[in-house]
Image 1 (cartoon, chains in turn orange, purple):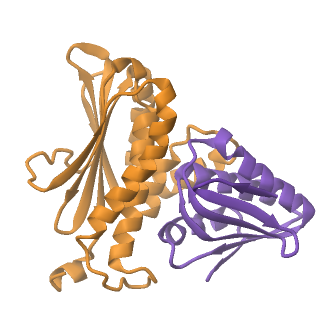
Image 2: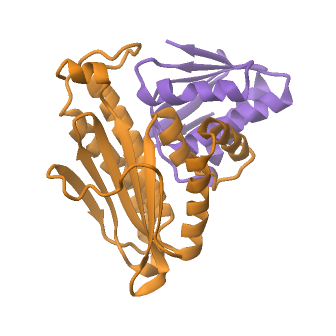
Length: 203
Length: 113
């Protein structure tokens, strides 16, 4: 597999000054279950942490204020990205999982990185290429029907992030220089948290 | 019928034909969600007009949303039961994801309180 980028937005934010990264050391199988439950703790922490940067202003057509909206969206998206990163990590690669959140003026950018075996990465790439070039709403409903028949590999996590939370994604698949059977998978998700109207009003 | 852990509680109240889900549900996949699914399937076997009350369910991951979809499609395909979902305007994931379940089953009653 050659290095490949799927998505329209940039996936490099390393020049940014303000970000928060959580890094998880590789774990053996018995520890994975414990790690799974820690995903929830990490996601809730990220939700609370980033919500603190936002005021409790009302949000149009919602009973939840801006702070609560950021908290709910960040904890959901971070949890799904961590669950995916853990689920699709190659155990033999012995490489860590990380999640970084960048606070921008109008959006929060999430970047999750894990290392997957080449077959897992190829399947995932095929799926994200399909959602990037296809009709998201149609794919979402098709996958929801499919998952209801017991297909557990239906990627509903990514689909709910993009469809329900109106986020956008870019994916980078990059083979390791010293082991081309392991692919570094980087997912970058853009979540708009302030409307242009709120932005122009100086919030 | 009740399933209770530190993080969540699922129970069925036969007097009101209501399944209550509360807390934080982040189970890894369908096998882990099976006991909850079974509880809901047993509940609807007892009442053809059932409510699922989600108002106190603060978090549900995508595997849990898949489980709810699976249940909704099961009820839809049986064709002889009424299903009502009760959500909260104050719980963010519910405001984002519940409406899609109604798209799976247009006869599903979705109410927010």
